[in-house]
Length: 77
Image (cartoon, rainbow, N blue to C red; front, side, top):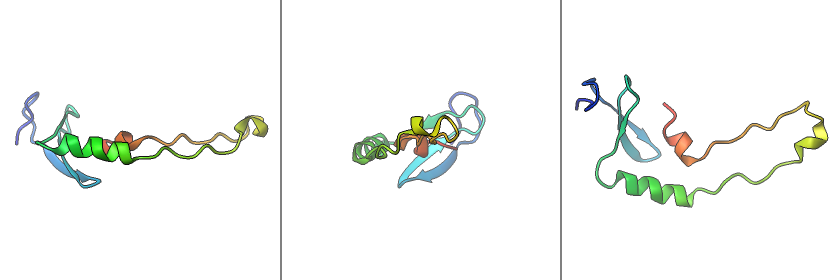
């Protein structure tokens, strides 16, 4: 299938059980019927990470890495 924006061949990838078509050139993402519903269903099942230690006690020596959400993991190409 061709990208509707720039005509590049779309790449199909599987992310967490959802098949996603994306364009490597313009980074556009296209979903087939039902795939958006699967993404929404999985995002509501996602629970954010539990709060960690108080990093103010480290006086700035260590920084806690922020964890991205479900969609960031899904669309990280």
